[in-house]
Length: 181
Image 1 (cartoon, rainbow, N blue to C red):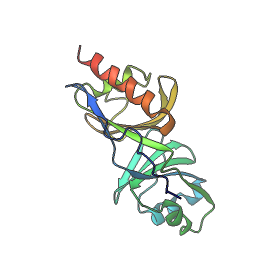
Image 2: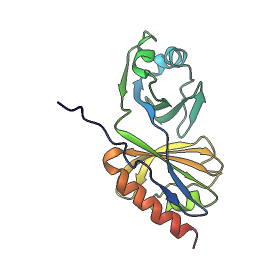
Image 3: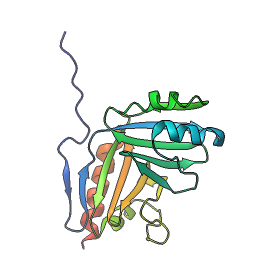
Image 4: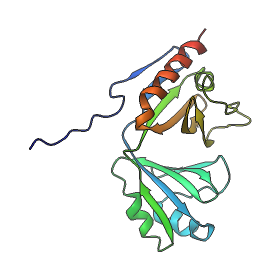
């Protein structure tokens, strides 16, 4: 029997506009991590990145980004093949670590009009004083839930479920073109 080959969502897609460029983030490992406050330090040590404790914050170390999504919830993003579940297990704490690497896809939005393109479908205030570099949040874009991460002055990462990838990319594409008008 032939082996099934999974096609990467949005494979080869790139576009946007002069002021808001779109590209697909490289394949990555992702983990949904849940834990009580007592487990944070041990988990941080095991994962090699300090889990942020404040709303809308993130931390990056050793190629791993930890995005705060709630008082006991983080999205971990790292190089493809990172075994977050195994790393978290070494903490010796009570927690939940679920590999969601194939559930999500990352879309990078960069350029001077990146925030405008995102705001075409997202109500999140992206002004630098409210959403500075390193900020992240679970929010809505169009009719879907996303995780939005500001990774640079003019750089954002939109994490959406694979099943919404075409819709998300298309809406971002429209927003990017409108942002340059």
